Amino acid sequence: MTTLDTPQTTPPSAGRDAVAPARTRRMPSAARKALLGALGVVGFLATWQLIPALGIIDARYLPYATDTLARLGTMLGDLEFYRNIGRTMTSWAIGLVIALVAAVVLGAVVGLVPVLRRATHTTVEFLRPIPSVALIPLAILIFGIQLPAALVIIVYATFWQIFVQVLYGVADVDAVARDTARSFGLGRAARFRHLVFPTTLPYLMTGLRLGAAVALILAITAEMTIGVPGLGNVLNVARNAGDNVTVFAVVVTTGLLGLLVNLVFRFIERRTLSWHQSVRGEEVL
Amino acid sequence: MKKNLAALGLLAAAALALAGCTDSAAPAPAGSAAATADGGSGEMTQIRVAALPIAESGALWAAIDEGIFADHGLEVEVVPAQGGAQAIPALINGDIDFAIGQPFGPFRASLQNLGAVIISNYASSLPASADTDVNAVVALSSSGISSPKDLAGKRVSVNSLGAAGDVTIMKAVEDDGGDPKSIQFVEVAFPDVQAQLEAGSIDAGWVPDPFMSQIAGNGGAIITHPYQATIPGLELLTNITTQKKIDEDPELVKNYADAMSEALTWASSNEDAVRAAIVENMKIPEAAAAGITLPVFSPELDVDNLRTLAGLAVGYGVLDKEPDFDAMIKLQ
Image 1 (spheres, one colour):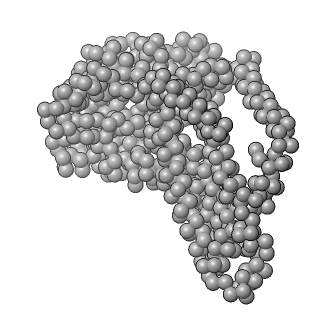
Image 2 (image 1 turned 120 degrees about the vertical axis):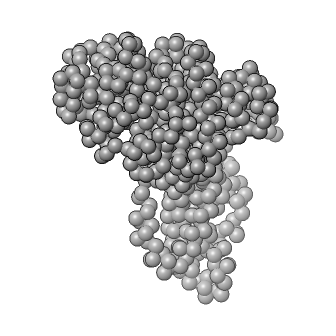
Image 3 (image 1 turned 90 degrees about the vertical axis):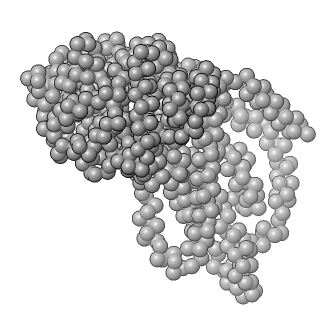
């Protein structure tokens, strides 16, 4: 029953006030966390530096961490680098929005209509495991070597991530809550707003966060395999030129972008779900 | 308040950092000025041309910067296609107007009646008299492979199976007295060949420059230049479009072929400009670009060479039958 009324009775700010005193007490632990995080990064870089230094992998194939970071530094001073990040993030954003809208609309409709859910189940389970990259030849045939071809594979992969979560979310509505809402005379729209939507939201947020990461992976894959301009294409050109330092500098960049995307979506998730028990109890990163 | 200040500081720092940025994609000032000045006389037609991000494309990049295409009223957008697998479908559906690609793309497209046609040559390997070539089969010195016939029974890499690489290697091995059918061809991208040789997963590999010189310089050996050993001066890359394009806009195709012809002739006598374009577009060090063996840039297509290549491919079972040359080659 909490699912029914929490969004109304607990405004988001109330939850935050309650956490405030705890946050001041956590300060030392936050500092320790930052320190541990920094140690982890340093340890990673040191291991990376040691692998070619000890000759475990030839430095021609795995360049030194220091060389890679130096190259990354040079790239950070080049406007074209930011344009390429912009190109990658543009296809990422367009793909993610299309997938989100389609998945929410279709997921809600299919999830709420039991006949549709049973009718589409087999098809969904058949289509979902098809690797998005397998559609590249088809995408090129239809759209050529341009952004729309990249969007086909980005949207395809991202759509299922969100769609399935929405389906689960809609199906998770508490039976007792649903019956209660019915007997209290709530209409279809009100039931959707007060019952289905709050139940689905945490699932949707998880799907969105997973989808955002998948969309980034496929945006870069599309640039590498189709030839759409962006970071993936820079990586490919460097690879063709045998410039492994740049290849790894781009790999690090894509890793950082993925991290950033994840942090932003974790933040959005916490903000939208501040009323939800899964977030209220969780420690802020 | 504190947060706002921090954000403002960060923004200011970012602005400062960006202001100090260079811009590697900024058009070369001289070239672009020439292009716009020359193009002012007539209307510019925009065309999309697919080209591989490899050294051979240097002639195209340099000629565009030089304003040769603009002189013909063509504004060229170079689309960095990853190979025939991408370029041919994109040509067929009209996304790109022309492609610079290996002859095997049109061969296969012709066998499926897709309507891809070769309108002129772009680059050829070196003639028989040269003691080097644009590509070679390389192996480690320790491999015990010293002549083409030693490749029999070995694992040899090519960048894409069922194309000019494996066909000419089989012919070179056969001519040297080895059994071409016993070679195990594997697909390895050019940049990965050295690592795969050292790891022992392949015995020899077919590579162009800069990898050919790198591997030869790092304790490797050049076993053979397969093009030169079999079909000297073989067409490496050709200008490809579709029959549909020729039917719909013969003037544009003719215009492109003329511009390309002028560009290639210019490029063959301006090697420095081509190398500079390679440095700029592939972001490789000048020293590496200076060591690259450039092909012969020429619009002249030697159809007999292509017939020989197709005949060999059929003989080795790489192609089911010979493509229809009359329909596939429409010299402009």
